[in-house]
Image 1 (cartoon, rainbow, N blue to C red):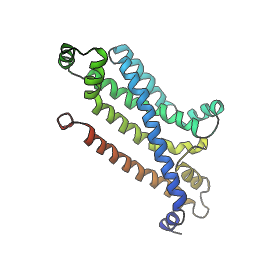
Image 2: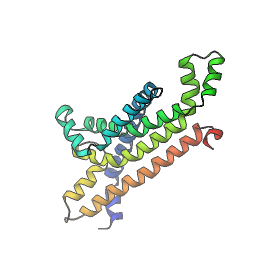
Image 3: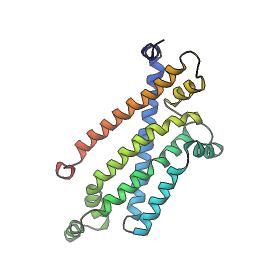
Image 4: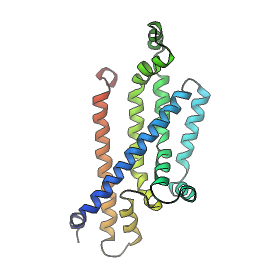
Length: 215
């Protein structure tokens, strides 16, 4: 059986897995963005705090995904929960780092002018600094989403969501009928979803970043 025949005959199952895969990645990216931006806001004015936050989020990426899931499963069990926690943690570094860089890179003269017209610290942060840092934050989210798209395949180890089950099933059944098609279908599906999601981020950038800042 060809790969095309395999995909067409199992399209309902594969499309559902693809939807769950991209949905899980997007939700974990949003969770990582919320946490990462808050952390960045808390530490960007402190060089020591920025260094510690970046180092901690970098350390998470050094933990092998199988090991992290293995540590989480005894605590939260199998299924979606350990997968979401692991993916959210893995997605923090680019967002934390870019938030810090974006906020720290705002021209002080701009913030001084904002204070001069009566904006308080919160107003300066929300109406000036975060808006100017948004391109950097969005880039961090884009990088995180691409990373998580691949890492999410490992979620199948914890009986999580997505196309990882196709990849793992195909690899464990290597040599049997359609095992290669199964692994290829899952792998190519992840690649296609990653390209589509990246295109969506480009579109979001076009719609939300002013031309003067983008250029």
